[in-house]
Length: 437
Image (cartoon, rainbow, N blue to C red; front, side):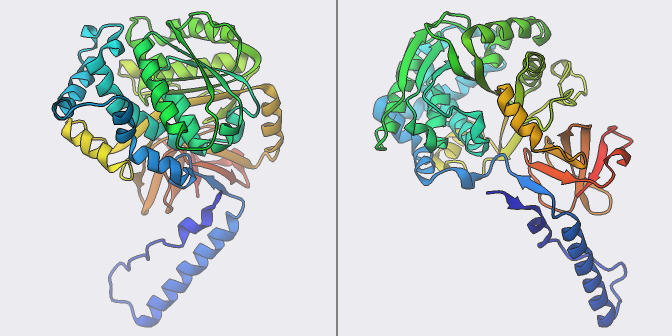
């Protein structure tokens, strides 16, 4: 449900007096003045729409229960003895090194190793389900299939995307979806299917059809796909190549088009790091040029103001990524992370949802008012003078600096009605247009 933006102003802290020696009558006058100004602000902004990207309220109770007890589900299909469980934190930490600073020592088929696979699903798959389920639960329904379709998940691993979709979008469970799952690790996909079926067994719904295909990105599948997904796949491809994303993306795009039907939808999720975000930004440009529409997270179809150009080599260019607090993550997952010395206070990601031109026309028709500016918050909170909080946001007018006294989170979307949008001031430091909420 869309939250009313003005509700964020109700709990605004009372302003402090400069000298603290005003009379009670003066203090009362100040309170009334503040109250009137807030009420006027509310009236001026009655047109503002505010939607969260990571609201936990949109995740069903059964999905929350499964996520909180995911370790028990894994233990049911891939049991470890007490000694192996004791060694698990060390195995997770060793795997982390192979995926980051020691990745040159990582074998291509590392997920076929039982020890590494067990560590992966108990830590990385669990965390991926937490962040992807939260995202999927808050995306528009038009991002997903609406009828029985052929689907393709590239770089499936232990079927994380399929499981996250089942948990986060209950309406999709009624569809007869056929999933081609493509990955180089047969063991990972087999274990992932067992986990998925164990979760489905807790409901009264029929599982989707799973067709496992062993192979890398580019391996042929029998049918064209209407819905194509991947999670962390481009990150792995980028790590295994010394070529920059600018060179790789053309090849990625060509293969994705070869896999898809003319009206296919695409949904890609990546770690919120510069190189992966840059890859998604480059794919965005190619899909737009090909006549597709970016449904999320982009509030416009123009040039990306946070394209991450060379950010992965140390430039100061911003890249598009989002984050949410892990304070309400499964307690046992947080404890496991601490034991492995890999604690997480925030979950981050970059993503892109691509749909057909029919959805493009529908969305464009909804926003014909030129005084409206759509914004997507792309940063954490930072302080500004005058007791304001600041956030950077993506808009059709480029990068924007949002000033407010309200609680705003990374990923939040706004539709703001501005009386004179062409005369917005600009921030001297970043060059961003300034929008005061």
